[in-house]
Amino acid sequence: MRTLIIMAMLVAGLVFSGQAFADAAGTYAGKCAMCHGKDGGGGAMAPALKGSDFIKGDAAAVKSVILEGRQGGDKKYSNFSIGMPKFQLSDADADALVDYLKGL
Image (cartoon, rainbow, N blue to C red):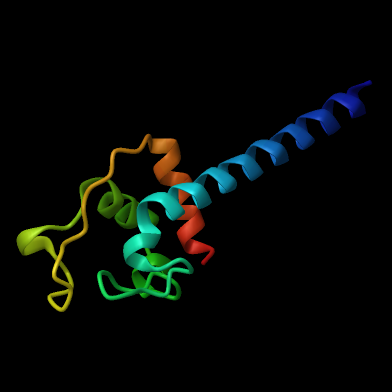
């Protein structure tokens, strides 16, 4: 019986983590891909995220840029005409998006 309960908990954990990944992929497609490219390779409006040292680095810094944006003097890339807008996401959704970006 105890083994069955443990197995059920493991399966539930895998299901929920898969759901978070699917949600993060949807968030990326709906909020990020237009500027950063469908595959994270960048575009005319924003830099590549795929393979980026910034994305590979500190997760808290990536999350901060997602939630706070980069405008004006905080804007990192002068060759792009627009800054990074801030997005209203829950902490859990922002964390899932950061995990998704790290997997690009």
